[in-house]
Amino acid sequence: GFDRGAQVEAFIAALRGMTNTVSLYHFARPTPRGTLASATCAATFGALALTVTGTGTLKAGDMLGVSGQLFQVAADVTLAGATSVSVVNRVRAAITAGTAVTLTRPTATFRLASGNAAVMYAPGMSESVSLDFAEVVATS
Image 1 (cartoon, rainbow, N blue to C red):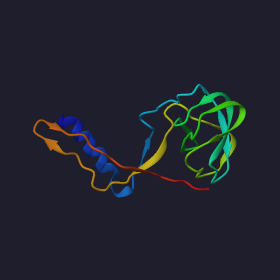
Image 2: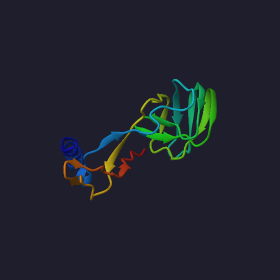
Image 3: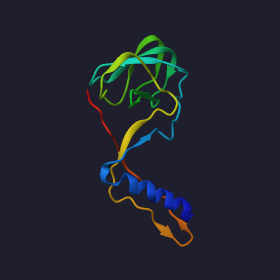
Image 4: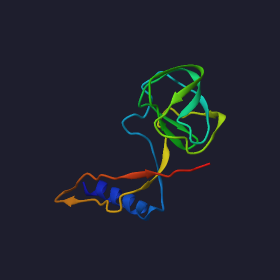
């Protein structure tokens, strides 16, 4: 209804101009499909793999959060101690050994990338809104 539309409109307005940011996670996969329950990791700047220490499995598409960076696992892997885990995006800032991995709703910081996002109103309701976000990349 109009109340929800007003909330979305205010959210969009606060993000215009690429000044403000929002922390987001992958809404379709808030937790890994694999069995890994806790882990730490390390990685060098620019790497396409993380050295993850833990026991369990990760599946292609699982999301990992480390030091404000969001990573998607590239291929299924079974972990037993320190294991190299391929990711689809490069490490944007070096990760110190022993850094905790966030497995439940891992987030990264994003800015609104679409400047023309708006809430469309119809009689008695507001319609759905599609928003494009770009990750705020911190580099080493």
